[in-house]
Amino acid sequence: ADTLVREVREPYAETTSIRTGAKPGQGEVSIARAGKPPRRFSLSRAPELVALQASFGALLGGDRAELERHYALAAQGTRRQWSVTLTPKDAQVAARVRAIVLLGRDDELRC
Image 1 (cartoon, rainbow, N blue to C red):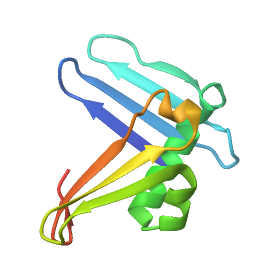
Image 2: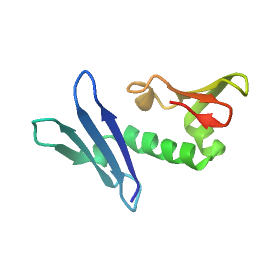
Image 3: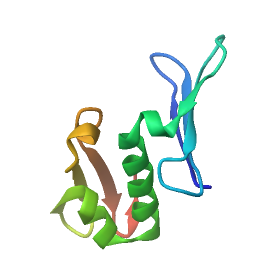
Image 4: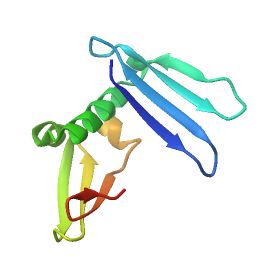
């Protein structure tokens, strides 16, 4: 199983973990806030999170074709200082994530 973890530090502390299962739609989402018991639910209740998790895997794996399947890509800047904006194509994902902006300098991701 693959896991994507998102941590928020301000204005509140929260950790969201998305763990996929062996088959599409399987897996679990866990949301933990300080001082509260974690909330857990099946990934089948939030299919847009499956696409989001898979897209981050494609990003980290350098799979441009997979990224372009899920996002419109727009690059700006120079090799010295650049940005890439990923805009979700899926309406369910776009309802929760307007865009993902990656900032870089030379060959280094700086976000």
